Image (cartoon, rainbow, N blue to C red; front, side, top):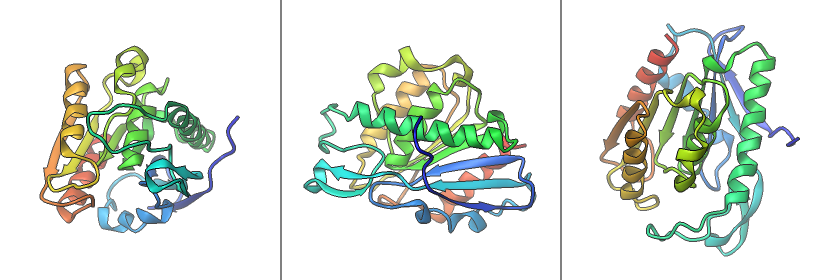
Amino acid sequence: MSTLLETLETETAPNPTHAVIWMHGLGADGNDFAPIVPELGLGTSPAIRFVFPHAPVQPVTINNGMRMRSWYDILHMDIGARREDEAGIRQSQHHIEALIKRENERGIPSSNIVLAGFSQGCAMTLHTGLRHPETLAGLVCLSGYLPLADKLSDERHDANAQTAIFMAHGTQDPVVAIERAQASAQQLDALGQPLQWKTYPMPHSVCLEEIRDIANFLKQVFA
């Protein structure tokens, strides 16, 4: 069993009945997105626990083997190449599933849990959420892509084949090419996955309009 990742937590009200587990990007940690909670303006929604895990520290090939928080190793940035750290991706999947299980044990069913993530965290949200054996409330996928894309049709679990996805990307993103994100969105659409696809005139970041759209999505799936 994976050791439970260290996390930051914040609750919008006491005794939360819903949860968002939010994965950060490469080299960041759980502090990266914690400040977004008050900006979402979810005061009229059910009480929500936001969980911001810290990814494990490990060497990252594209950064000359420097050790940093990373959900999996990144071997190259070539959009045409698809050699991926499958073992690392699947190990982080186990870490995230353990966090889902902890929320279940704290009284929040999977149907009241949203997975969210930025960049590498977006990749882990898509990978884990679509394979999870219990229906989730939704997936928030920001500035990232579908990892192990050629395995999804065989591995996607029926429990989340109709789970709503909010997927967004910056049109000026120099880190994760928008073409890769678009290809991921098209693959999900072809599988019949309910998908909201949005773009914003921004680089590899988050903007105010996007935060408003995320808030609206959370209100919808938690209604």
